Image (cartoon, rainbow, N blue to C red; front, side, top):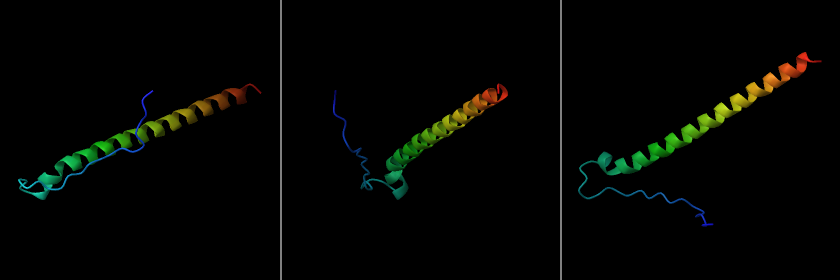
Length: 69
């Protein structure tokens, strides 16, 4: 089994000499940050959805067991 690295490297490059504006120079790092934020947001939404589904299942089980007493 291949060993996984302990750290993830994210390289951010400074402005290139031929870049006309700072916005153009930092666009690649902005894209990376947006992609990372999107992934984190999706993961948080998945976890929230799973918690809600688990709570619904728990309430359904409690209702069923409560009526049988």
